[in-house]
Image 1 (cartoon, rainbow, N blue to C red):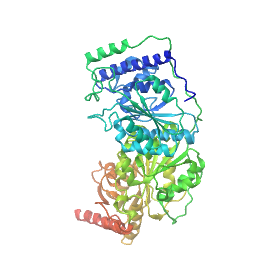
Image 2: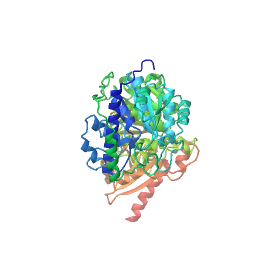
Image 3: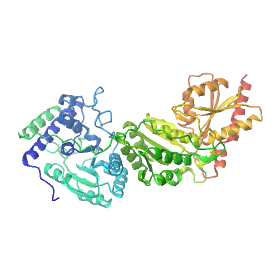
Image 4: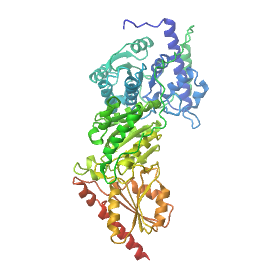
Length: 609
């Protein structure tokens, strides 16, 4: 601390005055909106020390907006529009606001995103900026916070500062550790952070600790009193509640009396711009896939091959994994581009948050992979990624019962339902090596959240390497001039459908086989046109539970076609261990089940006539 220069009294008073004005404007805004949340001194120090915070504590939104008014981005009277339907000042910050990179509100996720930003700054951008994350004490009960703590210390993110606002009070009762700040300190130190306890209401102390050089992540444990200086301070029952109008007026008068005139006018200095500009447009593979017809490869391996290839021609491709790289084959990327591979270990929630942070401000093209089923652990992070308008690409391998002996805990059987429910998501389901490589290329160029579903079994290459693929465009992979039923499969079940087509051909029964390629958006036109050509008969077959998967997507696409009949084949119950072909047969999604369903559908049509 030898180089620390204590601010002069004029500066300290100017900071105190600003903090008081932030309180006043927060009270005005929350009283008008009918809610109450604040965190004034801490946000003040962020903004006036040219720091770029990740406001994990979404409840600090009113004071964030008050800071914007203080620096001239908003007019003070605009704060009175807080939470109104026609105002940009939402209840929790979202990226539609110019200075918000990551949406907040679902607690425990901001520190992971801050880790992604800090990792990018230190290892990819090699820049001087620091990342600050404000956390409330209530959210420190979230395990994802400690996943992020472990990540930050392991990767020595000395450009990351977490400020813990320890005000003792949770939403419905006191936080577990209340004001035992020394316990928070011991926990942070156990996770490899340099930890300092400070008075969160002291401008001088905050300036001092924020100026401290550090060679490891820094946790500032700020002891604060909720409502300090006003009636009702440090008491329960105020979460989300505004001050009554008469009380707010008297409190504002009291706060105004604390503002002492001084000659100093503080403005944050411009940040040091030492990051290079990046363009992530037109991310293209330099050449077509290199597969031969009939060659066998698992789509999970084709994913790794495609990642490594994409990384060769674009230095901003970054890959994360959750200690499954030898199963998802992201290890192929790591072996070629080790400096752009980030091992997140078995902490899927944090992995998704780190991916969001790495993708902030279009600094990287981010891919993250694990088993498809393990993304269910991070579903809240995925939901918030959509709200954050994040551009991240996720690959879930080992989908469905076709993984075989590992059993149901490892089988992704809910993942299509999960990702289809996310508004900004594009869901790819490639069926061979060629379409997998195209899915990786398209995902890199597609805005929003992209999910690529890959399978464990090796299957034949079915597409020519020059085949053109587009988001929302299906492929008719098998047809004749007189098809009786349209069969739609994806991944493993597409190959079962093709095998069924050959079996039925011997019985002079022709089926049209469709590969949807993307489950969302789904190519309704190709499906409807094909179904009309097969007298409205559709069979869907999927290695997924009935709920929320391919079958329901197809039903939604043809709901207005009164003459259509859709028969769905899917996994009907929690599966078990077994060989892949045994499980496909047991759960009725193999070639034999498809041929039986086709015969039954044709028989029913004949009987109806």
